[in-house]
Image (cartoon, rainbow, N blue to C red):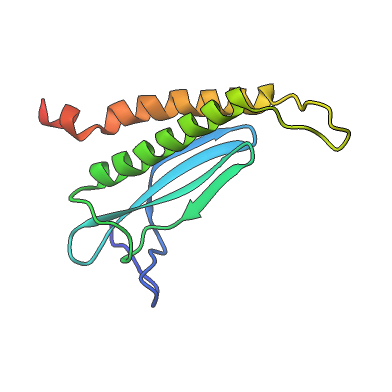
Length: 132
């Protein structure tokens, strides 16, 4: 696949390595091969109120393969989701009337997405690939 970059070095047609949708929540991991042969990663994610969006670009960290780029972004997502789960397990949000807000649905979304991310991490793990 030939990747195209705009004048700011952002890939216009990245390859999707992970494309998950769960109701309002979604996770899209994107990669692109840079002109020098290395790979960059991108992320489009929304889980509850948490969201990230960035495309593979020449200004991002570089990886030696598409799989290692996908693995790197999945690792970042895993750490972020674990932090969010830990935070919301310890904190109670209050509404305008100072009543506790039920965040159980948000927690379910974080946990479901984390489970899928852990499965994808195992699939993209570069150490696993060297064993075959």
